[in-house]
View: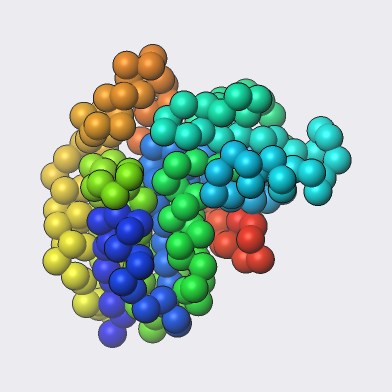
Length: 243
């Protein structure tokens, strides 16, 4: 029986044995939403880095104009970097280009997950595609859905996203006459998702309120869309590429 767990923040990965497991990283506002959007709109790959300095070092390996450098630290866009939100990246133009990307939480969560057998980036935007891929390709694996959180804190928007994935897993497995062992955190996330409006949850979350104060309501609304992209980003050799 497949086991599906939800980790409330990336720091919980430190206590996990990741060998043989499948990790799905969520950072709804906005890292994984931005990664999914970029790949869905033709970015060749996304290189997640831990910070701005690492991103700039990575950029030295590629010709000028072949990449987009995007990132933030503590919600402030880094000097000389493109704003790291989905719509801002689309406005910059990512098709046919590499995205070198760093954030305070999401790219750190991806780095912490690298000991797993498979690491995927997911968001509300591509939830169904990720779940269907995992059910098909990893039917017997333990699944860790990781909420990136923020500075060792729980984030509502990531928990809501985890609930969406859990709900999708339940419906897909039932359709296949299969079942799973869900942790209490997974069940709680599913209950939140199934009894709450997504856009309302994102707007009311601490990070969502911060984004609204910065007049980024359109970015929040964009990230609240469910399963509008079919891309499934897999982390391999330090880069995220569509499977």
